[in-house]
Length: 293
Image (cartoon, rainbow, N blue to C red; front, side, top):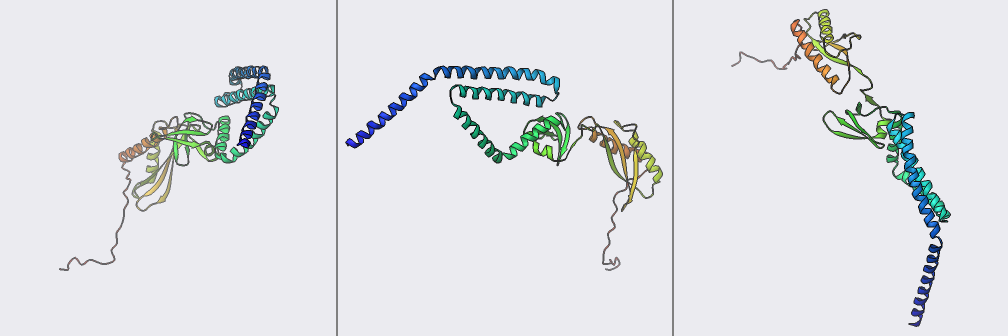
């Protein structure tokens, strides 16, 4: 019983001594704590001021808003970190600063392995923001997705399809995979496959097809319509008709193709040109005796 009491008294004595030392250290370092707090507040304020200044200067140098926002944010964070490390130095915590930097390096490596996909998407987002292969409002196609770019973030790109579905595409895919930007090419070629009867005059078919496609809205006048006969089909002679049209929005191409099909059918009907139905001949191995019975 005396042994336990002695241990308890010793533990209380050690704890009291430790708390007393801490109290003295806190009292002694109150001026440093106050100065460190003031320095930290100053650097937070300085970071905001510098960020506003950078936001005013960068648009005169670079027209890329996403890159400008990123640079101003990085500058603000760097200024704040300088303030934090300065405050720690004032409080005499040099070893703590070293430990924090070492720990940040180790954590950074660990997070790099654990979140390498996120990191890859982020880096790809930075490169996309700098190079701008596409912008908000552009019509793009990647894999089987076709739609309008509605949002560009540093990790993903949002594309709204013509069916109204919102698709989130990782920036890594947008940067490494081939994709088509229809908006950056303001003209497109409409290709149509048509079949005509073997009885039709091919010279007449060629001229009527050219006249039909030359009359559609949105056609580029300085590029001639092309008509090429391709093959002898099962029930028709097949040709390919090509016309270039202006592409200024998501539906322009589909509208031009829609009008081209209607116009060709109309011109063919007016000129007696036939688009034949597929013909199939059925053969039976056993002959039928119609006189039997």
